[in-house]
Length: 125
Image 1 (tube, helix red, strand yellow):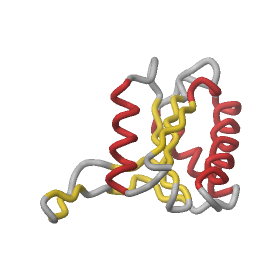
Image 2 (cartoon, one colour):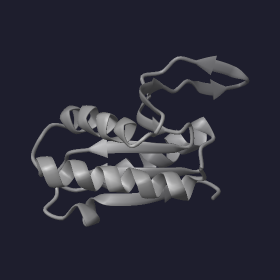
Image 3 (cartoon, one colour):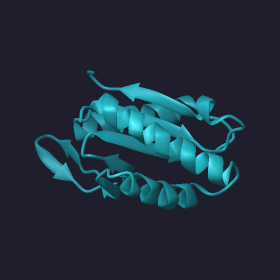
Image 4 (cartoon, one colour):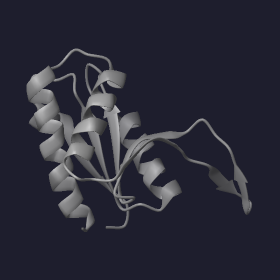
């Protein structure tokens, strides 16, 4: 599957989780339930994946963790906040660059309409 196909299936799973649970829960709850939903839909998912930073040809362990990596191609960065801020987009863009991935979905579950809470972020796609 390519990034767009994975993204389509991931959004379906995001909508399922949101429609069942609604807004207002902690990010960690959505992450665990979404991980389950993605796997139930046949997708390979890694959770809380550590992301090292390479600087001056050296790898450094950092506190960066990718919330969910789907099929080793699409990053899902989950939030449960009042509103998405510029820093959230920049964070996902940085994760995409550091991991050399092309597509990410920034998801805010704390919204009255999940369609408004899912944002596509690209890196050289």
